[in-house]
Length: 159
Figure 1: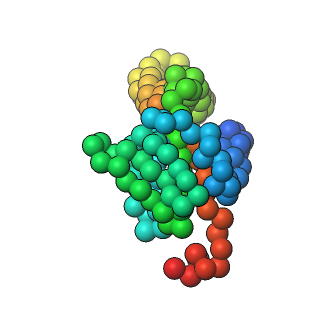
Figure 2: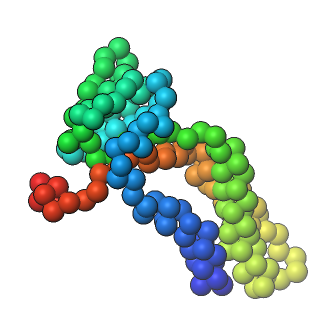
Figure 3: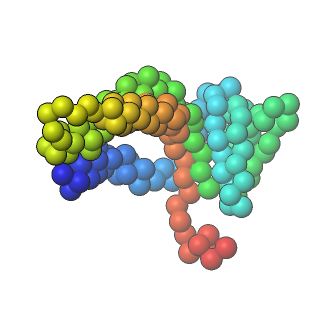
């Protein structure tokens, strides 16, 4: 039973992992950004700049963090991502369904097979509620779409 649950889970997560592995190494992808759009920039020292996109040039990208503008040189930029809230409700419902299904498979089926006729299944209800709640919570996490990611070069890897 555990093997089947792991197989189903890996099949559900496989598209996420394959999409996460695709790199966006063209600086000109930043043309898709609109001024005021929420972005996150990570530099070579792994410092994150979160705020509203202002502009980019061939030399740098500028983001508004609160009242200050941060200018990050292109040579230091490792990744630029935008926050994607468009599918949060859908992801929450999918997470709740998947979490509930896994909880049912993990609690109800084994307990039903080994229980006597008179036993109640209070732990089943708690497990299912936890699975639904946990799945919904994971679905609510905002996702970030990577617009630009620097291609790993030997010079960068040596830093």
